[in-house]
Amino acid sequence: MIGKTLAENVDRQEREHFLSVDRQVIGDGCESSFEERLTVEGKGSRTILTRKTRYTDEAGMHFLVGVMRDITQRKEAENKVQLAASVFTHAREGITITDASGNIIEVDDMFSQFTGYSRCEVLGKIPRILQSNRQGKAFYRAMWHELTTQGHWSGEIWNQRKNGEVYPETMSISAVRNDSGIAQHYVALFSDITAIKAHQRELEHIAHYGTLTVLPNRLLLGDRLQQAIAQSQRRDQALAVVYLDLDNIKAVNDTYGHDAGAPY
Image 1 (cartoon, rainbow, N blue to C red):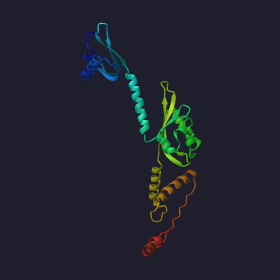
Image 2 (image 1 turned 180 degrees about the horizontal axis):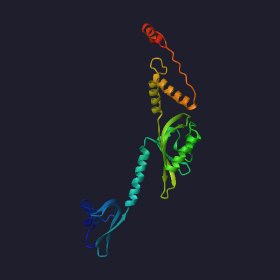
Image 3 (image 1 turned 120 degrees about the vertical axis):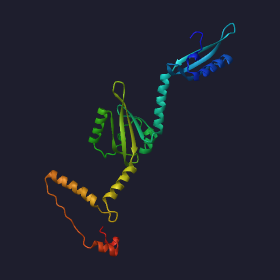
Image 4 (image 1 turned 45 degrees about the vertical axis):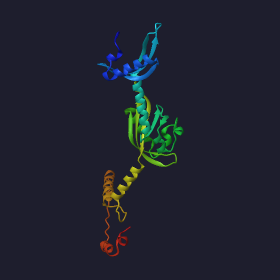
């Protein structure tokens, strides 16, 4: 490098930038410090922290003194943190992060919107404060067994808001392990599916009940009959089916209307 400029070894698009900074520092004597990309031809790009200043000797000659530090790994780590923070801020799911013991160490804004608990109210507590008691101990034992053995669990669960309202969620929990494979944190993402469940119940009601009589229809009868047959076979019991017919109901409906004729 003796007798050459640094710009000779960098990408063509970066050369003028390097030389202009050098000329500015030599010209006005003001120190320059900034982060920049350094692309060495044939060796790839790095992120460097550069500080340049002017040195004047006893004869009045100006010299440029530059110090460069490779901060590529640090910048990559910072970018990952910024990306994680951005995801955390803009996620539409509730997010809960716990330590290895299950104590809550962080939640996002959607967590508070879904549960009614503020961040300060849940930090240091365990997620059990959200349990609705709709699932028994066996459910949670199976959940933690899958989480500890496979590193993740996903499914539907009923939790309870701060105001006591019970609501359904879809939840996914993942273990965050260190280099030794030991779980250090658990990250849970969940969504409130109250509206989805209500829509499912509405569709099931439409499918299984008559729109006029609001009585169970043939589809529901067939489903229940199949269940009864399977149960009777398992128990080795007999099953009786009684069919009742209403005579002339069509004539009544045609004459007086469905409101008068249809059975309720």
